Length: 338
Image 1 (tube, rainbow, N blue to C red):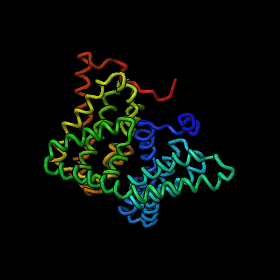
Image 2 (image 1 turned 135 degrees about the vertical axis):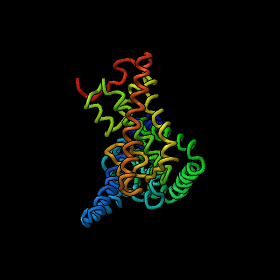
Image 3 (image 1 turned 45 degrees about the vertical axis):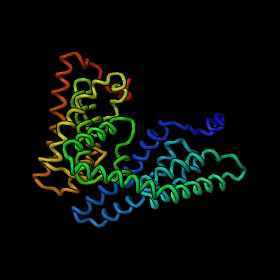
Image 4 (image 1 turned 135 degrees about the horizontal axis):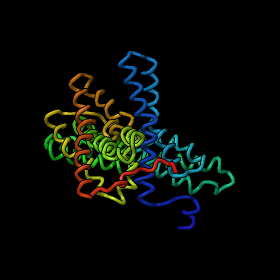
């Protein structure tokens, strides 16, 4: 069986299902729901019906996009990838983002196992893939979606009841998830984070990205500042594994700013912005979408998402450098150059 699974490219592991699949799920989300929401928001703000229709269409294709993205990420053959359009759609319609994820992962792996095993592969492979995905969506998707939604509502409720403690926990955990090789965006959608919980999650994610971008400026210069600050702090993962101490400055920045965002300057957002931080400024766009655009909100975003993480992370990282806890070159990222 092990040899068969290896031959079919089925790797049953935490990395495959909780890192690779979630990461590609996030790409599917961004290519449909998130970008669609941004387009729709632009259309609403400028009264452009064309943009609003375009955004609605993109958002409606979330399930198929997740299915294809996960199948591609798991190395599925073409027929399985194309059939994943249907399995992702079934999972999303019956179980939301969590349902789409589960249906896509299981149907993809089953599809890979039957692929090219018969002389009528063009019929068998898509049939088995779609059948498996729909069956999973029908029986597992709804209860899983209810659990994830309930769990997310508990987080939202807990954040409102204990704004300081829960705010710190949500900001820290979501920020670490964003920097780690898993998808904070996918987690935010599956939990359906909203309100203050989503707002503080955005603060934690922004702190990781802006914090790492500024703290590593001397190593990575402007290119690294932009790649990390509006790209992803995941670029620092290889360095974090070797030098865990570099994770301290941006994490502390999130811990300090989180209580402000839940008490003094209450920040809210939605699932689309909760796990994105400053990546493409989606977190900020979604904050304006939920809170409205005003001078007050703009000031809060600038302070809690940008200036605050930058200043706090820089102060802490410089202190750690002087103590020798962070050494020159430990935050240098690999941009693919020689």
